[in-house]
Every structure is written in C-alpha cells, then in structure tokens.
Image 1 (cartoon, rainbow, N blue to C red):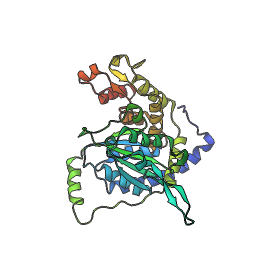
Image 2 (image 1 turned 60 degrees about the horizontal axis):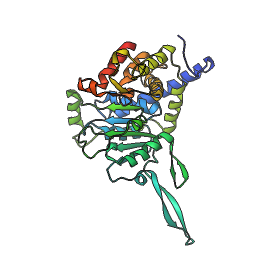
Image 3 (image 1 turned 90 degrees about the vertical axis):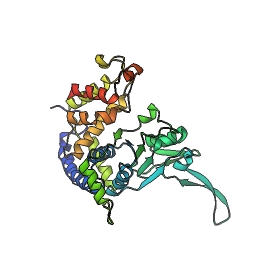
Length: 335
C-alpha cells in the first residue's frame, strides 16, 4: 500500500520506538481518566484524540454529564497546568487575556506591568462559552488560533502545549450568543456528550456518594504530550485514507458535492476539515494502539469533525433532515 507521509524508511524504526513509549503512556492516561470519569469512554477517547492532534474541542451536553470533571481529570492525568473560566455575559476580553496595570516600583517610579489572564494555561476549560459576548468569544478564539495574545502592541506567547476544551449547554438558549460558523471552525472537533447507560449510572451513584471519591493520578508530563503530538505528525497515512478524507469533505459541500444531496446543504466544510481529519485519524490510531490510520478511523471521526463545519438549507430542515444523517450517508460511501 502506498502512503503519503513525511516519514522515510530510514526513520520508520525510530517512529516505531517512539510509538511504543507513547502507547504505554497513553494507556496509563486512559486508565487514570477511566478511574474517575465513568461510562464516557468514547468522549474520553475523542478528547484525548483532539489533544494528541494538537487541537481544541467543543463539548456539548446537558448539565451533570461530567464535562467539567473530564477536563479537570485530563489536566491531572496529562500533568498540564489546567484552569477554568466560567463564561458570563459581563465577561470582558481583558478578564481572559490579561491587562496592563500601573505599578509602582521600589524606587517610587510608576510603570505599566502586564498581568496575565487565565488563558495562559496549558489546558483551559471555557465553561459555557456561548454565554459570553461575541467580543469576548472572539478574543479567546483568536488566541486559540494564533497561540499568542497582543496587549498594547506587545506580543505574549501562550504556553506549550496550549489547548482549549470549551463546553456548551444545548438547553437554556435565552441570553446566549451562538458561536459564528467561522469561529466554530477553530475547534478540531465537536464532541456530543450523552447520558450513561444504566449500569454506569449505578456505578456513579455508588462510587461518587461515599466518603472516598476517586482521585485522578498523574500519568504523563507536558513534554510527553508534545512528543506524542510530534509523533502523530510523523505517522504514515495511506493513499486510500487520504482519498477517503478528500471524498468525504468534498461531497459535503453544496458545490460539486454529492448529487443526491444537491440543494440540501447550505454550506460545507473547507480544507481545514480535511486537515483536521488527517491529524485526528492519526491520533485516533495511536490512542487505539496502531501505528497508521485506516478508513475506519475516518468514518468514526467524520461526525465530530464535520458536523459543526456544515449546515443544511431551510428546505432540508423542514423535511426533517439532520446534519448527522447527512454525514452518516456520506460515511457509508467510503466505509
């Protein structure tokens, strides 16, 4: 099988050696998170895949589904400096990015000093991001994209690694500010968090209401995560997988897409979606203990990568069509 990959044959043994070490650490991370967050294996794997791919994720779910607990636990397990911002309508960009304050030195002279905001973290939880004003949302999303902030003309680089896991409550939409489509594209994935099954909910009831709640354990260091992210970009990707990604993304567009969907799609994913799928497929393969992605990885990641990057027209919505159903139809063609 031919491949499209920056890794040469001479480097393949080095990649295999690095992958073996990364797999051991990732297994420890999954175990550490699973001991605290119950019944959300798919959500955990998608969040971990997002971080390995070097991206940001939007977690969507009703309250009480352990979204906050998941982010906090991932921060501990990965050894990251994690912080949380509770978004509210009165939150200002300076509350997130930081600001310059007038300070007086020991010599009595006054000068401006930059005080860093909570965005200067390795893992940031943006809780209920849709409750902040568009101006504040834009400030955070710009920092996510550029990896730095500019205050009073001075550039301040964000730490590495830097990831944002934002949450959004699909209920109580009054007084919220939905993220614009162009800004949603900054998120590598949209992860829908569902309800646990009965057995898992029983475990939650028993294990979290006693006097000894489970505690997360550190399983990686920030340097290990950065090394794993570099490894993901060096992993080989087959020509067939690349073609499957291109077919999927291009068919999801209103112009030149799938003829059976003509007139149904209002706007579709751009090239960034193909880039996201290529990186996420590699990362998912690594999370599952494989050294190269397959079409199955593309199919599994199609919905979380594409559904926030496309929208249906009014007629399609009136007929009861959904983005999830459209993506599932496109995936069936490449599986």
